[in-house]
Image 1 (cartoon, rainbow, N blue to C red):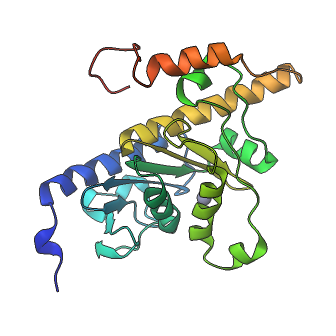
Image 2 (image 1 turned 60 degrees about the horizontal axis):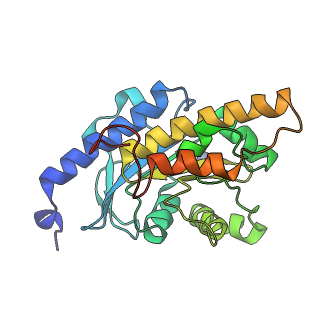
Length: 243
Ligand SMILES: [Zn+2]
């Protein structure tokens, strides 16, 4: 049976273009060495995911090279193999119902925190504008999870880190000894959040270097900054614009 006839062609074309742009955005901002990064997006109603193909140089990728899958990770369209991190993206889409885009990079400062296995404390308002709390860290994965379905289990490790956290208020995580996974309501915002996370990680590194005893900002200042951009009473930017 061909599924092609029921695919929403126009929406998928737009999603392909958006996901390609998200992949290029993380390159433009220096988050990606060679091909170490990937972005995806989803059509929620249809449960269709578009992701970067594995190992193709960014300057050669065209929208039609992106791979279309369902929410089980089955490839529906595309001659190239999907990014090997697809199973992690799939776990995130299945577990976090409001996210529309996922980005993974090995950006240097965020990855340095991940390798140091330290969550990033909220030292300032740039962080507070985007993350309502520290950027969390996953627990190291047990050997049997690494030996098994590694990429899917990476997603499971992220879900475990969010047992008591809200992924709509904390749009990213550091996977221990690996690097950041970041998300957002769509692929464009996920890429933006990945760029901001790298900047937060860089500033936090300098902050702890300048003052080993630097402490997190007060919850009053944290809440003020987070809530002026997010939620019911947000007033930052212009009405109706994407924040
Ligand atoms: Zn990786």
